[in-house]
Length: 290
Image (cartoon, rainbow, N blue to C red):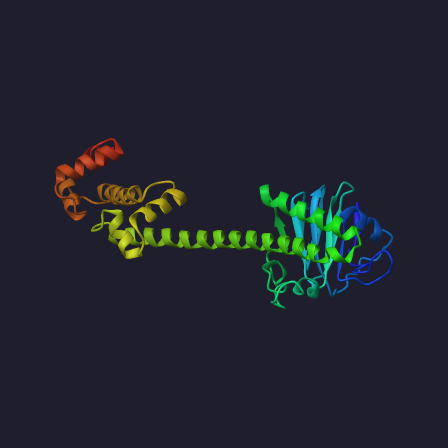
């Protein structure tokens, strides 16, 4: 296992010169740090991206432990403290850069600091990449490393362009994931509101469109949400609530079937009996006897 602190050499190159950007293979970075036995973590003045392309390990960031594997990208801000333990098969890339390195390429001097994975208290220090996104970011990382190793200043803006691509692709993934999560919460709240409305109004409202009107959404959207979250239609949820009430009244009261039909707002006892038998398998009176 490799254990250490990737911050030891910081932004100094092999010649001992300070640079605004450093790129290297993760295995090389680990070999450089392996001679350091201290695990003390220092505050840095640069950002880091670590893309894992093979192997696995554990990375601890601000007391939060992450199990990382191939396809994970790790984001480290200037103020974050971290250490790790990787297995010997670990592979990947390490990028280190100052905030000014990228802001020379964009007009917003807070661009890097405002990225969701570099904000304080972020929940996105480690991002799992999949499919085309994973391939595109790995290609950009390899191109950055190749351009960096040419040690030719004329390619510095090409490196910035690749870095910007990685940052923006990662931001897009975080934004989409967050939006999906937010929509999921909102949708669950809508379903809870729908269920609450059914409890209050099933005596009078029998159709999804009546509930959708109260919820300020379309009947089709309400039905789609019910199918997605409850795996049944909005109409089925209304029907099931009515049937529960039918059973309660048959079991726990002495009301006749016709009285129950009237109380539950069925147009007549015959319709109530057919409705009950269709969904329960037996008529109201037989259900009560059983």
